[in-house]
Length: 141
Image (cartoon, rainbow, N blue to C red):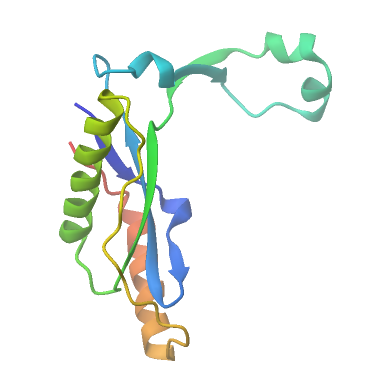
């Protein structure tokens, strides 16, 4: 069963709203799982290793599953974590159906009204929400 996670590094303020990036991952046995399961170096390569492919090949590898789809949404700062994850799971469901049918994954967000010049209180509320999202690391299961 695929899962959706919030990618904390992409949570930020954008035009007076909270920007959230959902990363959608396949589980073993899901359609196309092997496409997104890749071997990567277990650590960042040094400049010397990057310059010399023979050295780079010596770095041990680990398996990682990359997202099959990423999707951004924009919410008000008072949107609950439960509401956010409900949206994430709805997008996951839609994305996986399209993925499994080999359709284009163009998911549509509900329209939002951006706040071009947010006031200080709004920016503080957004900052608080972003901080909580980064600390909480929400994901479905």
